Image 1: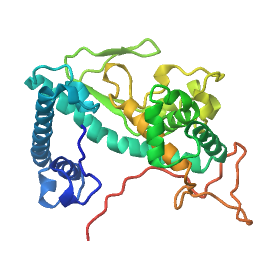
Image 2 (image 1 turned 90 degrees about the horizontal axis):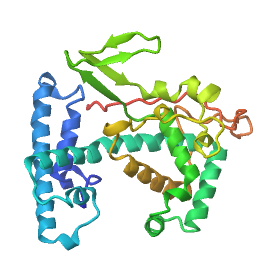
Image 3 (image 1 turned 135 degrees about the vertical axis):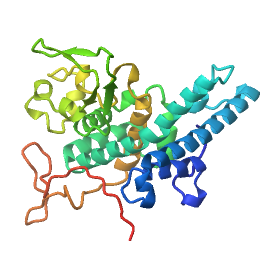
Length: 321
């Protein structure tokens, strides 16, 4: 949007859009006083206010671009408005919906992706070393965020081609730990029919269909006996087992696939490049590495560090005292 939302500052210094989104998200908590009795009303009220402020921002940016077409930025919002001579209600609604996808839907999902990627890197020293080696070869000795930014901008057309192994690490992380899912409701009398492998036809009208990426991504029919193991090499050219496109769908597929997937991948690559060449890290608590009596990490046959306990994803809401 080419606008600083001040999301990392204190609440009083954040923009109205950020504050409203945080309030809207809090309506899904169970400790909201009297509003817990009327969550739907509160959500609609906050969603309406949020849409109002986003649309006001869109209108302002549209007017700025119309007045100064030569000074357009490369933000998502500016690019989406570039070919519009008139901001119709339909275009305004659609742009608002798309911006909310970029701003809110892609925020937590990218964080979850990075969370699991850092965890897998911490317990796979071989993979950690290969990623660092690839990044050192592309970025050179400089490892500051500013130097990385400049290098990416300098090689924007060849950026991803120089980070094939790191991209494979991200892809494997998304396979094992998909951060989101999708569902579809087929209203009655829609006529949505599917045919099972057995040949049986089913009408799914009035049914919610849920696509569980975790099950799809860990199918032994596609990924073999090592379906649950973290192996980035399976995504590199020359892999012995070809993987059909339909077997990897963290961003879903088709006309309704995530519009922010390229942005999410680039964000993840830049964050990893900024962190892995400056720091090493280890997990504490659940999923922590297991050490022998000499203080060395215990390594399993596949080269991965053994862990004291299995790590799983969980969301804990802080209950106010």
